[in-house]
Image 1 (tube, rainbow, N blue to C red):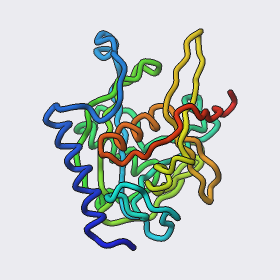
Image 2: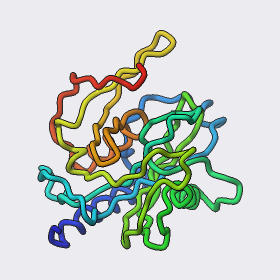
Image 3: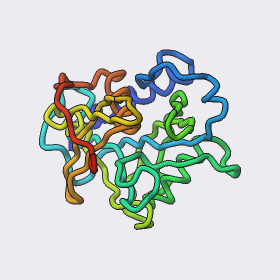
Length: 239
């Protein structure tokens, strides 16, 4: 376990990022120009980006950023391969904002509990980031930054929804050997985006698309990103 000040540094940086978003400063993620008409008709959704200190599976490497200890991690899940929407993809816990949800933060916490079984009482919400419009699915997604003050057991709650739930060491995500680019070709257009490879006891997981975009943007804003080869391409599943 690393000294407590290292963990505090990571939490302090994440808190500052949420405060910047609340103040309307520079966004945390890299976005292309979006048609405002799409934003007005989008459905609201939220995801929980939950960082914490990994209990028993720290990274084998030291990150270059001093704030990133070997035991700093982020919660991810792999969607079930049988789902109609984004089957098999790695994502943050989250989903649509329902009518009974007070706000996006409440929706993100509710979905995280439903999908991973975590104890929400052990979560400190640091704050929401600016909503991100997703053109393809017509959703306006609010990322909610949070910190795992008191860890609880997590796992697959519904096998029809998720194939795996895991805490990924941030130092491993930052490892240039685990970074690359994915290329999605659809309807005559090409979309290139950042990607991360995660290897753990549940298998090998490619993090790409919206989830990778959020991680990439957050890491850049916090100054955690290490130089990586953007020309290196990861093949998309079933591509």
